[in-house]
Length: 282
Image (tube, rainbow, N blue to C red; front, side, top):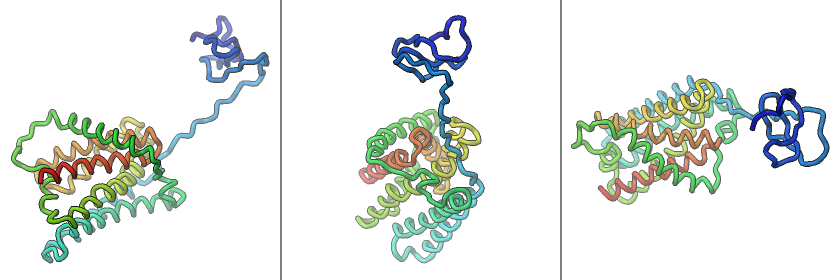
């Protein structure tokens, strides 16, 4: 809609759209303020300021938490390996993951207490709704599509090497109990902790510093790179790229919804689909 002819001054004028009787022209554009009665107000309406989320400073703490957690997890894994896996490989995987997660969660708690309210739910929007399940399912499918698109142009020089997930699970899963442990780690623990850390702590700060597009992309790259910790040869690079591709979808869900719920559901379903595929192929 063009402005009022010959009248650039802000004020109430006949609504050019015809939906209301009068509409406010702010001097540059028609606004959403309109009225359908004969009263023409003198004061200019004031548009409420939009609340913009500002990621809390804490990238340094995030780096320390990730490295520290990785070291703890590695020490646990090596100790149990040297002991001959007394309680099985699934137990070793679970305890080493808990070591890593202790660093990730610890960083979030530290930043929340130093920069926020001390509540992970409030500070990182760790909130869930039943509708997140449907959104998450769609997100998991979108994540697979983007992951495939990211790695499709990359030549696979090692076709004989198994997918890292399949190779790892093949060594860890030896019975129903071990499958249950892996399912809890992959479909519950990892989505909750990783979304809290990468999309709750890291991404919002990067978005604040770099803007939505670059912030989400960089957070996704960091997310993918973090999975190199499970190094099993050059094929792990392709695996990390695929994870980064899925991270783009998870990051977009977080940014658009303003909550961790949809992305966490998508992450859980994404991992669950992969675990089911591995189980059927093992």
